[in-house]
Structures are given as structure tokens and as C-alpha cells.
Length: 255
Image (cartoon, rainbow, N blue to C red; front, side, top):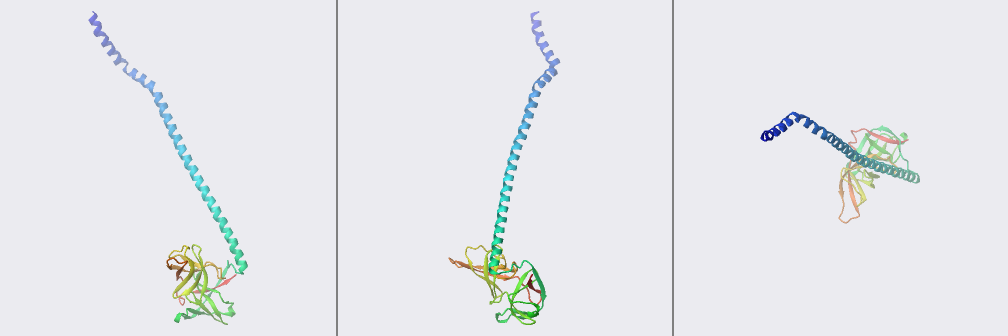
């Protein structure tokens, strides 16, 4: 009889496990499900918090960069205003017009003298048309062609930019100011400090400091010659002005 009970007990345990297996599994799941959900929720919240901190740091960095950029622009604007005031004051002291407004009048070129380095032309307007010495002659696009040199009743002589007798004050795109003189088929900027930064193909304009309208296009830098150990360098320009007998030209009158 005792042996029978010994066999019966394992059978009952097996039957119990089979019958209540699903219940045990459900109980186990119910015991662990809530902690798992809680841990998962906490993990998601931690991720959100970390991302928020990272994004907040990025926003702060962007805000700092924007403020620095704004301050830089404010500083540059004030410097430009200061330079403008100094320039205006200098113009008043030198009795130089700013030429902020210009009136142009089309002219005809009826004679060109480029032989033996003369580099000059004659135009069909003179004293009777209000032409004055030192007046700018331009081509389309505000390109400087030459300067009125001699005036007669109904015509005038104009020195072209490459004329060696012509000197004008110019400035580069980077702001270097220099005196330029006609040379061969271009112009030469002399006594430019070796410390000045000038690059090939850089545009060169009139500075307006010699009474000419400001920012007329003169030419582009074609060659830079700088002797070793020298204090100055020579800067050569290619002129932008085109064929004087084909392209329309204009006289510039200040308003």
C-alpha cells in the first residue's frame, strides 16, 4: 500500500502541473509584466530627456553663434558708417564732389590717334556743350575709357587710359588705393606697399579721390612684380574698355 502512494504522489504532481500550467504562466506573466512595462516606460522617458538635453545644447550653441554674427554685423556697420563720415569730411576738405548722381550724354568719336604711344581720341562735343577738362568718358557698364584733356569750341581731345600722360587715383576690390599711370596697352600701379594683399584678376575701380566719379571700372590685375626684399611692388592692369571706334561712348556730367 505504501508503494502505491509512492507512485501516486508523482502522478498527482504531473497532473497538477498539466492542469494548472497555463494559470501558472499567466500568474508569472502578471507578476513580471508590470515591472517590464514600468522599466520600458522609464527607459523611453530617459531617452526623451537625453534627446531634449542634446537639442537644448544645440539650440544654445546656435543662439550664441547668431548673437556673435549679429554683433559682428553691427560692428562692421558702425565701421562703415565711421569710414563714410571720414570720407565725406575728406571730400569737403579737398573740395571734391561725391558724384553720387551722374548724367551721361552719348558722344561720337571721329578720330583716333594710337600711333607712337599717343593713345588719344577726339569727340564731337566741346566747350559749347559744357565739356570740361578732367571729365570722364565711359562705355556701357560704367567702364572708364579716358579723360578729357583739351577742349575746343565744338570738339575735345580725350586721353585714353593707356596714355602714359594720364594719371588717375584707383582702388582695388580689397580697398588698396594707389596712383595709376597709362603704360603700353594697360596701366601700372606704382609704389604699392609690399604688405598690401592684391590678387590676379582682381577688379580695379576709380577711387573718387581725384574728382572723378567713384567706382568706374578701370581694369583687372594682370601681373604683380615684387622685388625680393623691396618695400613696394608694381601692379599691372589689363583695361576693360573695348574698341573705341565700335563701342558707344558717353560723357559723364555730375548732377
